[in-house]
Image (cartoon, rainbow, N blue to C red; front, side):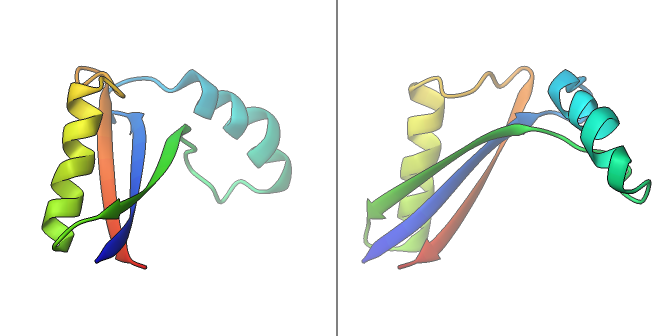
Length: 84
């Protein structure tokens, strides 16, 4: 089975996000004050062949950790898996 796996890397909630703060202040707030916070991160999409959804998720998590795609001290990852 082929899965589309999305890896999203963002700063942890306790870590400042200067890029998100700048976007919030100089772009978002020109349009609305209803958006309370903006955070910016990285988005990576993988097309994975795996026997099941859990295997696809674990493979991408392994790549993220062992490939040092993020710093676990300041970042958190979100992994979403969808069938193709």
